Length: 250
Image 1 (tube, one colour):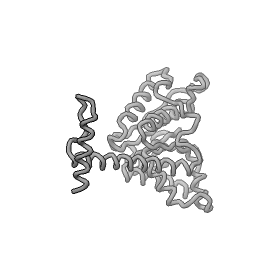
Image 2 (cartoon, rainbow, N blue to C red):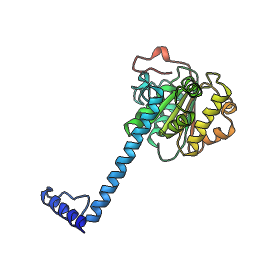
Image 3 (cartoon, one colour):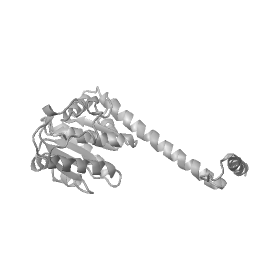
Image 4 (cartoon, one colour):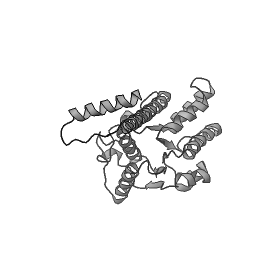
């Protein structure tokens, strides 16, 4: 009863000092307590997201998006052909609709066609909306996996758990490096665990759709493209030599 009376007194004091015409977010002690609980939940969720990002970045020893791509946005992506315009549209749509489902994305094409730029633009957009993002190359991931085998990088289960917690995990250079069988098993476990928990994966690869399917397997390929997942072919020539230092692509 004391808490209810105290809440009521606070509300009355707030009403007296609020400017005319301003409506409070709550008008009863119960509404005030509900508001406090909701704000507490939001704060707890935010702290949890930050902790997930910190844990994942600690594994890599760097920020979620490398410095090379921290300035990549949709606005500074160069469009010189219809294919690039389509890729930009799809990437923007994916970023803007993020969270409405768990669809993943695959950007397929040769080096220098802008896959990394648009993936980083998605990541930078999500970071501004307080989502957690991690972009990691397969060679780097293989190094992390081998470190767990050697007892130098924590446990494999901890690595899987931390990579599964971020809102968006982007795997770069998929298919570039020939990894060991055990490393590919872990890679598939990471993708499978994320998709099973309804957390999307981004994949950047030089492989074709058929080659990617042969490497990852039909089951994972099906799950990557479900729930509005997208596949975008970057099938134009490299324009890396033509871009300025603010338009670095990969």
